Image 1: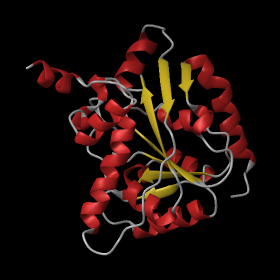
Image 2 (image 1 turned 135 degrees about the horizontal axis):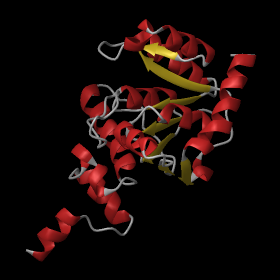
Image 3 (image 1 turned 60 degrees about the horizontal axis):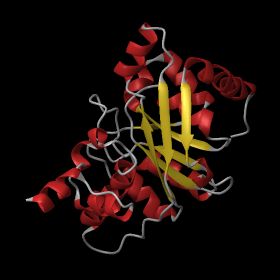
Length: 239
């Protein structure tokens, strides 16, 4: 959209206030393209990740998908409108939202998405959903995995109560591509591609945060490529 004064005020406020509220440590920001469309796929553990998006991405064409359940809150409806975000029904095949996101991706926008579809209450990875892999395969744009550490709602609240600045670490991985879907077994393909995205996020997280992907064969491959030996593999070797 043509950026409104309100949009600019929101971004300026985030850029000014977030560094005061939290200490943000970043790694791999150079992996984010300055122009062109791409998808950032990240874990989702806390609400602070929303302002973090606008703090880290110096782009005016950010695409956000917001769960329909928040539409009942007036302030969030207003915020969604100002940020030009898209409402998404997570419990149905919301082709309208996906088509809009796909069109904006192909036009060069940046889609910020959590494949998990919702916040993880435990702070560990939960199963990813196929929306991100579907959009990546259809758009042909690169996927950039992002891992955020220290953003859990419970952790942030506890630190704020103690008058401590939350220490947030953000790791940005290398871009990669999801191949186009071929005829037949679309669900199997989407699941494989979703697992690929999630494992590329998991490899940048501490072992305790990898959740349901901790023992995934693809994650083990990625760890070994990085010269790491997962504890589960190490134990098998010792036996």
